[in-house]
Image 1 (cartoon, one colour):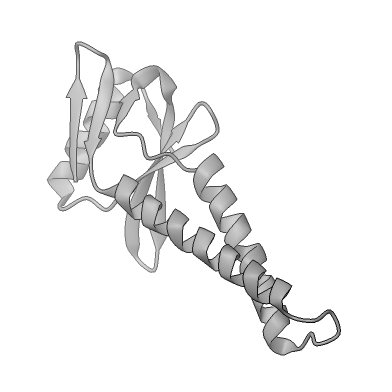
Image 2: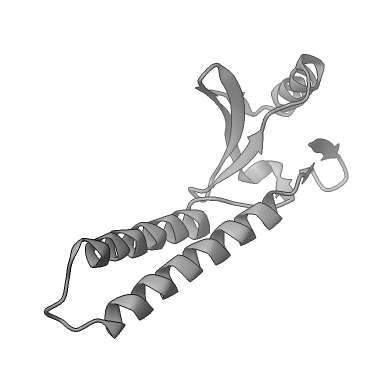
Amino acid sequence: MNIKFNESENSIEIKDRLKIQYLIFNLMFISNMANSIIRLLDRNKTEFGMYEYFLFVMGIGSLFGLYYLIFKKSTAEKINLEEIEGLKELSILGKKSFTLELNNGKSRDLGRFNNESELKNFCGLLNKVGIATK
């Protein structure tokens, strides 16, 4: 992950492959929903069994996942400092990951930093420009 501060535009540039990953997730969710809808419409109304209920739950789960990725997550590679509300640290099973909370209600995942010095440099940069860490 490569994060740079652009002073002339007052923005942060993040170089990671998050946009490609979210595109793959979106395609997966859309194909799951399409598969569920096609298989459920192909069945007669009286033949609903455990498999059809599983397809229904999988389709609804894919719909919620697609909504979450489109409306709650951001893949922007260039973020203005005015748009950033704060930095949030998450710890799952002892591994730390970081998220930028944005003013529009979305969040931008930063993932994991390669080493502690990269993390300290980024937190120092955010503190210098006046963005709070949560």
